[in-house]
Length: 427
Ligand code: HGY
Ligand code: MN
Ligand code: MN
Image 1 (spheres, rainbow, N blue to C red):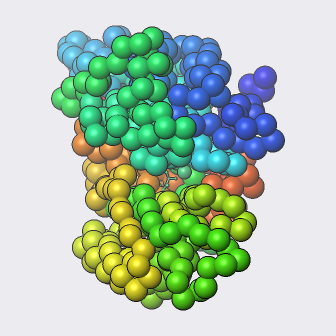
Image 2 (cartoon, protein in one colour):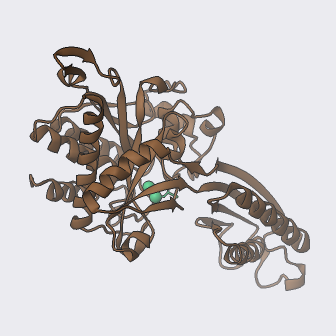
Image 3 (cartoon, protein in one colour):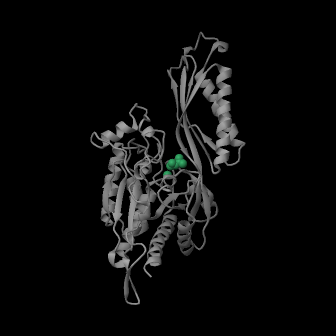
């Protein structure tokens, strides 16, 4: 196992990147066997860095490093006094689940980098006057249940009874999955931390876009996370014989869904800043010689401005009504997720940016088109995000890549951030 921090971080990312539910490609979904193995592996690395490890009832992996009491007491002019951070905790983390056929950086980077940074501080004999919790959220992508952020919603006590009813492709509900995970009993978890005990939540994440690479920067900070709406749509027409049913008499559910998909794409192309995606589509009954009777698909719509996102959703709803009416096909919507645009804390981001400038010389502030656990964590405590550039901006793809050089800059920023935060409060 390499000891140099950058090589060690790269090695951990590679090793964790092998832990998958689908041989031959990286896929780790909510409460899956691979997620259990990932928690064990990362939990071991947390312990080696000196953290106390637990897994909560929603499957989140939590590593805690207590504050150093000595560091907490300030020897200012001979007087010993508690620092304002007495009993405070800084939260660092990201998610350990992945999309299907994922890259190895999206999520794990934000869990493994803090572990390596804390191990590096320990090696340097640096102690912190505040506690640190490294969080490996069990579900952020929303792959298994089409609703994202189940892990951070559990940690912040915001998992709702409605979410427990969502069902996966096998018909298993979130509630049933959590009951099984917890040995047959599951109660909706309360908020894991009192807000008054928290300094904030800082997430390191690949940019998943091309800007940092184009500007020749390794890292930047995030000003806000775009809002997003996710739906499940079902189009119900009439199955029939592909050979004997005249075209004029058909109520083809797939043709309706296809016209809708092209219409949504056209709307997003002509609306600045809007992105819309249909990523999953099932056809029923699913035979080559049967006219599709019903089609179910997802819809993911995002914009940095909530007003414009809502206006686009109205237009998309009108398009669906018009297509359904003209084709004699019924359509039903189920909203599976709704998050407003989430600003990052200016004060916490300024502290992070101080370290970015110290390490990189300059900084850049970006809006995140991707969703992150910070959206949910912002309800609990101030949030800040450090973005790390990735090759061609590619993500949610096995070729997702961040260079050891850029990883090294991000590590240095995290170490500098922790040391400055400690220094700010120990006089
Ligand atoms: O979908 C997203 O924006 C993120 O990758 N979960
Ligand atoms: Mn992510
Ligand atoms: Mn992702």
